Structure formats: structure tokens, C-alpha cells
Length: 416
Image (tube, rainbow, N blue to C red; front, top):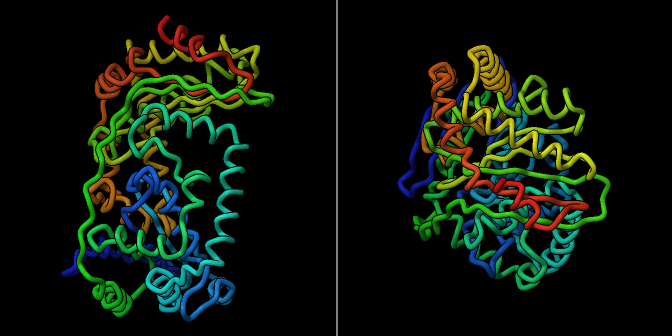
């Protein structure tokens, strides 16, 4: 069982004791990601994530790393389009030190201009790395197309033109304006005491209340994007509208995805790879946001097999939407999803992330029994109905990277 505390300033603290473990995972989550940036601010949230590791008034960047290594702990962070998270995992005996380090970074980072210049270079290298990864590039260009005209279309890492305008003072001001208490969720899971919880309440209770502006709404719009790149394989993602974080049908979508493209027994893997030998990798996935989402089918393959593979993918998706799934497929997918939930929760970090994501994004905290019950409640008719709704080819999108054809070629293929 978890406990939830809401401080007077709006900060939410969620804790869950995990029996039989000696570790604790602590996460500071903020509902401020790339979609909260204006166009000229693109990359700010991710830049700030980097800067919080560059030193505080009490610790240099090297000392931050050395202190965590000295206690055998792990500390890291990530930025998404919806949020930024800073987290640590340590033995329970070292939890006070890990919490002190995280809070020092969170409240007292220096944003020194010399560090800004250095880290800007690191981020530009990171952008180059992602540009060189065609799978990531394919997904990023797809998001830019289906969410065109909204902040969800922009890359999390930003662009050189926007990053060059950011200095230390500006980044600190953006953090202050967007890291407001009502957007913060502190999650702690594993082995800890009430004193640890009280210390977190004291640290975050001192923040001044504040309100952030409303999100600009986003919605899926179909489109096709191609990027010619001199690489060996073509990388293709076929996409349809998806679901938001909090949509109650998300459990149905997970089972649908598992059956369609979630593993070696899935329909796409069996028909496109195993039976026809047209690719090495093929899978489906859902990308969900606060108010929108898309469902994608990705593959990488040679140019000479691309058309046959796409025809097969389209046929498999159409047949899925028209005729639904068998009971055996549903039962197999259900057991896979339930096993993933239960085995994943053997990690304190998974418990911590589940608490924070449920509170911050899904707006509903479900315990493992409730999640299992949600999967058990899904019927074959639920899967077929959702597939019929989502897999309408009038709403299909496509992203292609490699030695690809022109956009009109793929539009015609989808229209056919």
C-alpha cells in the first residue's frame, strides 16, 4: 500500500514500503517537459536537466558523482515531452545522503555560465547522435508530423538555433517559472522510515506556492514524412491515432499491441519476418501524452523488400481491425502483460516510477491487483472495437528514413 501526502503549497509526496528489500528509490518528478516550452524555448527543459548535474553551492559536478559512487548508489535524470525526473537508488542506510544530494541539485544548482557553454556543446553532440540513429529519427519525425503545429511536434533536445540563445540566468528563470509546486511529485519506494518522509516534507514544504499556465492542447493529424539518408536499411513507421495517458482503454491497447506486434508470437512478427523473411525487426508500440497519442508499427528492412513488407503490414492491420483476435491470442497477451507488471515491481525503482507516473500523468494510482484486474476485464470484443476505431486508413500516417521514395509514393500506398 502507498501513502499520499499533499503539502500546503501543492507538492505531492507518495511513498510505498516494499518488504524484503534493502534499497530505496527516490524520484523528484516535475510536470515540465518540452511541450511546456514556447517555440523559442525549445530544449530548455532538457538543458536544465543537464545543468542540475553541473554543481551546486556546496558541491562541484565531480563531487556530486563521487559522493554517489562512494555509497554504491545510482543517480540520473531524464526529460520527456511531458515531464522531467531526477532520481536516485541507494541502500536504505544511505538514503539521507542521496536525498540531500538530490535536493541540493534541485534547489541550489549554480547555472554557471562556463558550465552552460560546456553543456551546450554536450547537448549538440547528443542531437547529432540521435540524428545518426535512424530508428530514433524516424520516430521523432513522425511525432513532428502527426502533432504538427503543437509543442508535441518539437524535439525534446531542442535545436541549435534555440539552444544558442540560452544562458545561465535565463535557464534559472525558466526553471523557477515552470518548476512550480503543483507540478511536483516526490516518490519514495523501498526500505525507509517515517523520518525520511518527514525530512522530504520539510524540504519541499518550504517552496513558495505558484501556478503555471495551462497546457496548449494537442491532437493527432495524419501525415507522411520522408527523410532521405544514405544508410543500408529503410526505417519505416506506420501510425494511427492512439490514446492519452489516462484513457481507461489503455489496458485494452496494451493487449492489442502485444497481439499485433509485441513479441515473437505476434501477428506482424510471424507474418512479416518468420513466414516471408522480409525484415529482421518489427514491433508495435503506443506513444501516449496528456491529451493525445499515436499507435505505431515500426520496421527496418532493405529497399528491395520494402513494398512487399508494407503491403503485408497493411493487410495484417486491416484483417486485425475487421476480424479481431482469437481467445488464445488474448489469453497469451494477457499473461505476458500481467507477468511484465508483477516482475517489474520486484524493483524499488519500478515501484517509485509507477507511483509518480500514475499521480503525475495517468491521474490514477492503481495497485498491482487493480492493474491485473484491468487486464483480466478486457474481452475479445473490447480489442476488436478499439482496433476498428483506431485502424482507419484515412487517419494513417507514415514516417520513412533511408533510401526511401517520395512522400506521394507512400500516400498512394496508404490510400490504396
